[in-house]
Length: 221
Image (cartoon, rainbow, N blue to C red; front, side, top):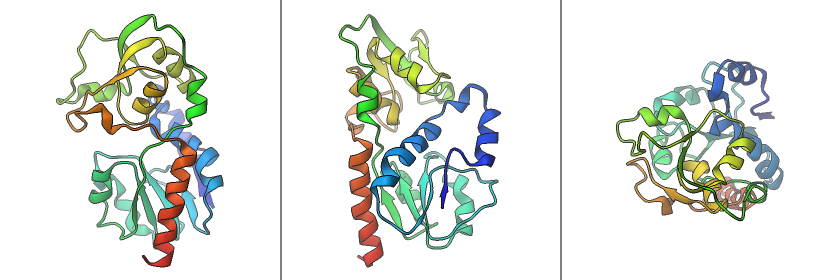
């Protein structure tokens, strides 16, 4: 069983989100389904994205965690049995250990070839911020107020726009995409003061890492 971005409850909720419907979790889920799941052998269910109010709770599942700021958001995980939580940040993995003893830190990944198509030979603009507008409201944000904001747009448009810039304030998968586009990535959150933390990893390479970690869990290592 796969619960993903096409699941009716999530699809309905996403339609009500306005510009926030173009969020990282949605696009990551699409790549997980396309590039990671087909390359991992397991008998477990997959949950690539979901909402706390969703009532389907399949046990024996691999669950991708997207909310890195508020672990309490995942209180509903107590309804699952034998779940493996996939976390994209080391700190998130630590925070969620009280929900499961089966935690895998899987660095964030992107579809590198898909992003490479948007690279340009000559960059015509200097600097911009790419990401959710809400992040700019955080007290620890370092983005200057006069910097153009690339937000609330489909991923293909975002990649086209980012490719024009020499420097991009970004984090997470957006930072990986910016690096593939040849942009210099600038840190803007105190949690990630060094942009070198964001290392480019292709989805299919991530699938190989995930397979090894799942095999360890299934063998009881």
